[in-house]
Image (cartoon, rainbow, N blue to C red; front, side):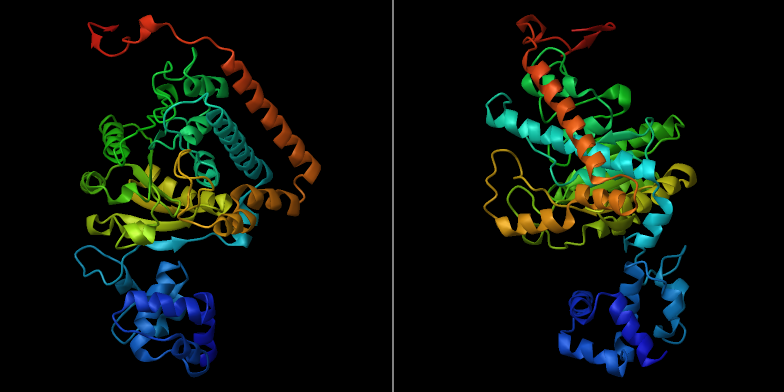
Length: 430
């Protein structure tokens, strides 16, 4: 391979600065940036070629095209696991759809559905924030603002028969599963007509008839519960996939890995989705996790992991679609996804967020916002005009406002129902 070919590889891997950081992470040696940049003119030294090949593999770049990087006796097949063979590299990697793939595979209707769901989630959450600040919603309240690209990109490929389960940041998943906004507002406000009879509140939303199983307040508890749902579906021969959502803070819980072991052992049809919004309850991932490539956390169980940009819902949709079909039709579960995202608000409504700067938040809003990204796609491809999209937004705002006002006017539940649904005896709810 020519020196120009090596320069092309370095460019594809993000340039010398980014490659330097990755190679230092991969090896025990301390290579400096100046040395890596020199490879553009001099070529990649033999001692570093396998490590560079691993970077190509992780980024889903065609390694076969650069097979001359590999030493004699090592083939492309050696880079990934095969039955009863030594695993040199894991199959975990970063996935990203190109702009060309997005244009060719995302049509007008699909992009619009994703866009409108994101808008609906954001306008709903903004209204919830207002109601909470007015003292009309009690308890803890965790908003999803900034993370809408994940649930929208996934809901647009899932079926109603698929099962969803998440933690306490659950409003968006309830909206995506088509629960009427009025019912969700009533639940949050503790009124008659609430989705969980005004007993669950913000952290315990539930919609069994749409296969949404919560809304769970215990950090990480949804992972073994979701694993159990996937086991039940496989046992009953149901052709469904379970989507289990949890955060970067929950990923360090012990029960998560007990669940991973069972899911891998029984090859369950489940996709675990780490919604990595960069911060747990006031602590960054870097300060809380010894190994920050969270999509690799299932490797010791043989679970493939993929990192996907959660702020690019169209790319996420395309990457997830193939994975979803493999789990659904080819029994290739479980799979672990790390969706890199960012929350604009605090961990909860009571979190002032002093552990990060306003500049950091503003830069993410301006440069990576998932709604703006799809909005730009719709306009650039002449699917809709700015005025048409603004009209859609206004219509969604009116829908949200109307549902919230109606919920505020609803009556409180009678005290006599407080102990209903606590026990189930002889076919009668008690």
